[in-house]
Length: 370
Image (cartoon, rainbow, N blue to C red; front, top):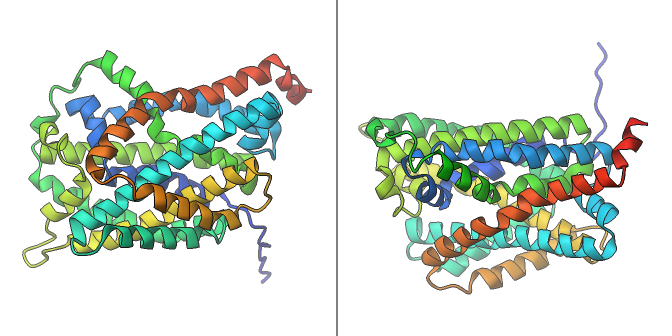
């Protein structure tokens, strides 16, 4: 019997990139994102993630069209190619700020969750240091290794999530979902457009396109990653609403952690939140590794550095310094993150559309047909 061993090429296939997209988006259910969504969608907050996902299909389609046209070029290469050096630098700096803003907020937020919910006597800055150090170490191994690690831990993190939901539904009151329209269809559509910022990883991940083995695998990973993560967010939002009720949910900063404290797996299985904590912490660390590697990759393109790995520790130090600034972080995250969602959606949706229009005007797609 002949055994064929594939040569390691340092690139990711469908499953590794899919799980990176999936975990990067779906893990938002464990931070303050559900609180922000339910403030916009009220009791129809479970519908909002689906609307956001459907709206994102337009910019994603433009992005996929461009990546297919330019084959092995990343989003950064395409930006420089279509807009020129000067304008390209401005756009890429804005992309770095978009990615960096989310990385700083999430890193501090997750450290804050650990500090306020679990390790009350441990200094927050120490937890922040541990989170950044572990994430930057994983990021330094490269995006392919991050994808492999994410695929390895995914069954454990997803398994814990799918155990949590049916147990939590024992405390559910499904009348909290009515009326289904919430604030009304026009408001849901408006917020669906503005809240597309929470899916900015779909735009940022296009910088990894040359690291994927084929366009077909990249496209499948993005579409399936978007679809599955949006459905999981919607499922968790439904669970949060029927368990807490949307008026209460708007005041709960970390509904996932509160839910793990609420449920029990049996008469003798108490304090199960520690079990969920470990799966959540490990998965979050891998997720942040993706963000740090993305930040370093974008920064490396600005400063003309071929290998982004040496920049990763510098990114970690900068994030640690900035993340330590706000004192009342719970109020800061809700105000600042909400403002970022309200305004940065124009960049997330507008950039792929702008690049596609420029390519069309320049006649680039005619070359593809030829």
